Length: 367
Image (tube, rainbow, N blue to C red; front, side, top):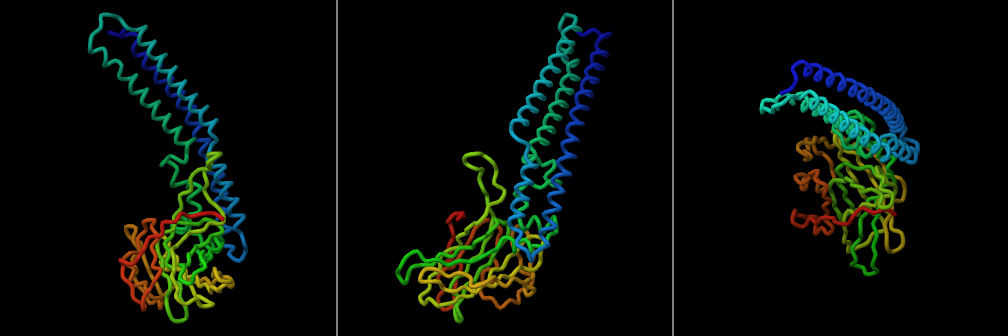
């Protein structure tokens, strides 16, 4: 059994030591959170202010802001290891000290009921480990659900749906900084060689659903739709995360054209969370040489009020569709946010069926 005179003082000293330790850790945690939140919110406000200046080319500034945001968001690895090592040593020494107090106050013989006297030690140790986990969340903020709603991860700043739903920026203005463009390129010299259709972005904004349709004056030659969402791995050499990239190419599929006109017209509809009308890009693509079509000038960008939609269970539901664009109604039941890009590269007499759809499996690349 334990000495009944000393035991209450042991428990009181343990609680006092725990409160002292946790108070110092709590102050440290609050200072980290306060400083980090203030700095990151200041950068976020600057980013939001830039998003409404749609008439300027601000893609470089936005790129630098996101990189700056990441620098303040992630604590370097060495300080993280030092802090966690300090916390582990402190917990170990404190638990060892408490055990020594128990040992000094123990008076034989041993009885199984004596184990109940260890419950305060177990409870206080669990509380310390809980605070250790809290501290780990604060210094490894990218892996914690604690502050994710307050401080978004750097990669969330490239998410059009996140910006639209939670920060309320102008989606149209942000996408203008992405400088979307459409390119058709043929790699072979034969007349029946397919044309590779590529969506180009100057800045890698993602997390949206697209619907692309390319047509001549008479016929539709290419249809593609799906979700654009990126998963950039860490840099292979430095190990640093890549929240945003420049000059991305997104293969949408292949188009087969029996007759190659001098000019094509292309529409891109952009659907994002937090909005109810898609953004409509209209491109006029002119043939350059024998092997590519490229935009002749800047696209016309408008809000398409002829289409109203909502998103339920990662599926786009068209509430109203008065758009003259073909194939939207036919494929609307396949408008799912699942990260897959589908396309129809050969359309016979304006007719199509679901089974003719193909999946674009080519990876996104940087040029």
